[in-house]
Length: 243
Ligand code: PGA
Image (cartoon, rainbow, N blue to C red; front, side):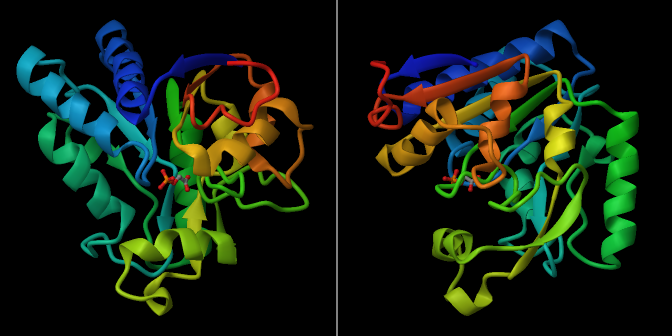
């Protein structure tokens, strides 16, 4: 795992944006794996700005998002579908038919099968990840095993607590979500994990310095041949190796 050390969230966003912009310039029909959460918000803003100023085009790009809440319609303001349009897709020239976010409604097995089929036919060139303070990537929560494919998960209390800030009350936070499996994430050709802030310092130390275990889902990234961690100094502050 290559670690790019930056000062703060702004620099982490700039670095990550640069990587994605270069990817799209080098391969205009890239397949991007995208993430939600607060971490990528500034990076997405930078992609929008770059599209406006430098005309980097996403017209041949396809995107696949990591996850979606179960039970939320795409038009729900807290759905990840809505988040992606608001933060990125409305500001770039990606085609609607090339945008994919797991469907939050309908039959669970059918939704998972359909997403898995699309992902098998469209291998991801570069996957963006954030990390939960419990080590989750996508909504792959700490567990006894690594799940390979898209599945529906029960969210842990840690994740519900972390995400309630986006909802009016904790009761409104969905208890289940769809997520790409760890196997699919690991089949991306390149993975970029962006980590910012001291709240993530403990988990980032476990990922970088601890053993590979499904109890810390992101620890599996050690086994991937091309991972770039973009982390700020606060996020790296508990690592024993001096960054
Ligand atoms: P955050 O969430 O970017 O809002 O910290 C990351 C995650 O839970 O994957």
